[in-house]
Image (cartoon, rainbow, N blue to C red):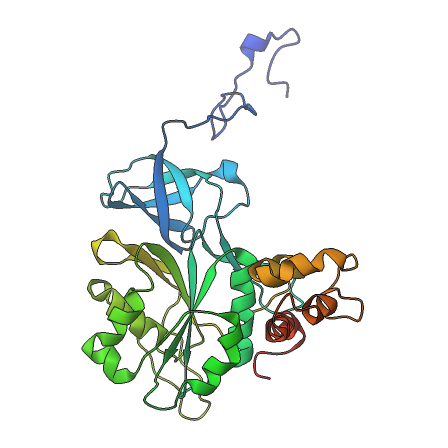
Length: 336
């Protein structure tokens, strides 16, 4: 049955507006020049907790950002309700350019890199000297990720009451990496936190380490007012720790003198995204010697110009050995 007559006019046709309204779409997006500046503190299932003008607010990513995700440490532009009151939700409309990026992949043949932390100045690599045993290959991988992402490394060795640090420190002595050695007693009386804090003042520091090394216990000692029910225990059979931190979280140091970013414990640290040409930047005494290297040189092959550079006395051979050990860590598993 015909609903309208033979000579219907468009005004006779009843239209039902769509769920999104009838406003025409446009490719011109607002610039949000009046957006507030904020810092991402943590991310949980699409909701981001941000610090804006001293207030913590909950926000979500604007659709116009597409697949670009904000991570802990990102500086972002935010619009909407910035009161921070319960049941309010703001909107992140822009992610500012990053000064550094800590990235990892699930394993070395995984093509998808994951950004863990943005804009950190320093990477504190926390490892226990015993219970669980130290894993130098994992430390090497974290160092490579730090050099690649533009972060300065810091070694934090815990549980020195169970084993001496000398052997491990000797392994990294030629890299001139600052370090702090702590014991359980020092963690309890606050001495360890004070020594570590001296390396953190005025900087944004991401903490990384495999489970059970005391990373979160140390973070809680550094930021006691932000204590969380996160301290787990080490499995006596496997020697592996139980994960106590489930998502990265940025915490302010007392007196606004810096930030600590606690990250989940890692069992592996893939480096599929790492380009050797970026790691060499962390070795200025060797970088100048790469000018004679063949194209796409891995810096560990017969034609590498670094051998002649070191032989001519421009750099210490131990430094070249350290560089090659770090670069070759992609071909080895962390447990080797």
